[in-house]
Structures are given as structure tokens and as C-alpha cells.
Image: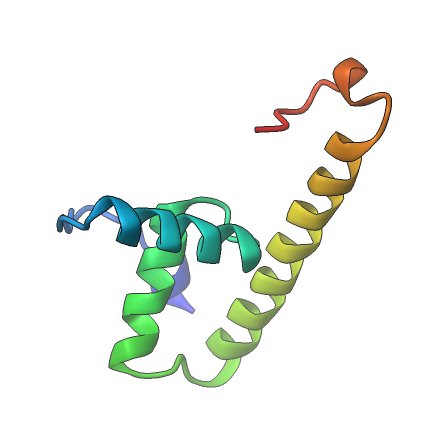
Length: 90
């Protein structure tokens, strides 16, 4: 599990069109990713091969948790008291 907790020190950069960016943002939100960078990192790492063993289980559980939190935020922000919440709804 060393890979999961290793500090990230390298930067990868590439350009996308406005349409591609919007598509990626929508997919990231739909899958409950914490941010677009995490979504892109996960997608690229899956392209080179699936995580193995215990790491795959940890990844699956984190993804499920991220999705649940995103869904909870969506529901809270849609409610009538959303203006009173101390969470970012955007």
C-alpha cells in the first residue's frame, strides 16, 4: 500500500478543448471524485492497468465514499435550508 500514501511530487500537464473540459468535469462530478485532478489521475492509472490486491479494494471503497459524500452534498444544497449550511454548494 506504499503507492497509495506516497507523496505526489511530479506534475503532468496537458491541454483540452473547452468541450473536453466540460465533459471531464461532468464525468468527475457524476463519479463523485473529490476534484478533477483526482478523477484524471485515477482514469490515467486505470488506462495502464487495474490496481492490484488490497489496493484495488481500498480504491473501490474510497471511490464509493467519495460518491456518497458528493450525493449528500448535492441533497443538502438542494434543500430549503441550504443557505444556512456551512459547506460549499458550488
